[in-house]
Length: 292
Image (cartoon, rainbow, N blue to C red; front, side, top):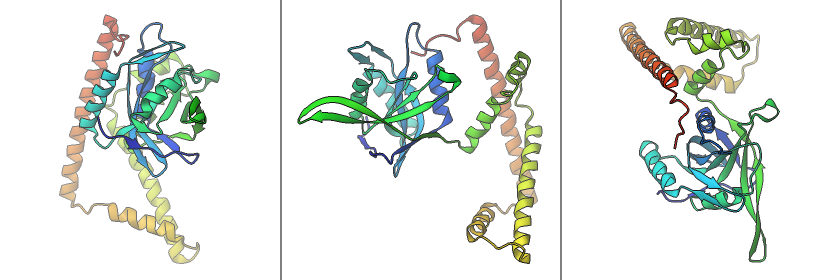
């Protein structure tokens, strides 16, 4: 396994979680074994200053009681080695568990992950929807000792937020379609919605882009005419944005656009194929099989 990563400690530490991590945890909870109260797993990510960014995760099989916890260490190491081949820059930053509260056995699991990384974070994902709210909490731990004798492990809550990348925001927005209309007809329409509406989506995106460009142009005209005092920070931001725009000829732009359309059609085909595969699995009754 990789060398132990040194994570920041203290009250100024914060956690940023990507949506794919939360979706993977929820999927693991839905597919958990019968009579299993919760699932646990490893969190992978990067550390920048005092911010721990959680980018990925995987489930670790375990068996616990009120007095002891058994964790499948071999599975944990195997999964981490596989993730390292795909994303070698991601390290173990902590572990997650589903549920609404902390368990007595969490101290034992925290001690296990303390051997994988210094000051690991413990993230609790409330899949029970307590108070009709999907909450995510993060904790760090500190040891309470009397002299050389360790008495207990205390979990201290730290700030935890969800962050979106551009690609992730598109997927989340798509899943939120029909959220304000929870009728069965709306849910069915949302589930059967095809990604073939690329033209309509592109038109809406171009419309929003045109509105933003118009607002920026109006602001620049106002500053040039002296009606509004200019902000240096906004000016630098606009200059940096314009510098990122590639200078392409019409033929090059058309070629790149056509290639992107072909890529979109391929994604549409693969998504339809995946949807058919999932529907077939549900028919065969295999969709609820456990993941481990």
